[in-house]
Image (cartoon, rainbow, N blue to C red; front, top):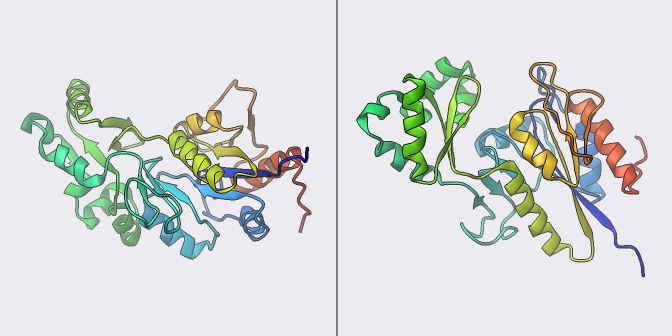
Length: 278
């Protein structure tokens, strides 16, 4: 029996992984991504905390050929029209978590004793988001264009935050802690989004063996990395490097796009996809 062709699906974080932490450059990874797309050798899927508006703007600066992407930490999956059918509409967008209007509705129902300590992006003007985040005005406007998560500042006590978590849990929401901001979100994760993408692509490529590769540098990437057939931890000189003892997980030899190219090229070679260096 002839061996089935392998089709890797590469799910990747962006900042500090496919993109350099400081310059936001994708070189030299952009060349590999373009080559994989041109030769239909693999699917590269950004899986990011960014909003869709932020990612679309980034693609104008870095013209990377992504046909699929996952935004807001696994909460929303975007594909070409009619690529991913089901829950939302034929546009290909799937809300894996809780839709933003429903999140805002629950915020509006919070007890006043908790609501007064809660200041979300929806409460802020673009100028206020600029002041709170240090983002440029256009970036802040795109960061406010949310579909399934709400970043917020909290001025209450830790005990009151626990009360908030209990209240929102009744509506299927949870609180994730970021840096300065907390995030009100559903229970969608990056690994769930990756599983949905793999399932969809497998249905469209029934004659191929679909294998997952996941790369990231932060704690919110670890579940996706460990769930993949091949996981890659990217070194993070700016923060705590995540660790895993799973045999399917390796660490890239360098941070950012250079390490990305090394790790992906190594895995593809192990799968029999030896790319000629350009």
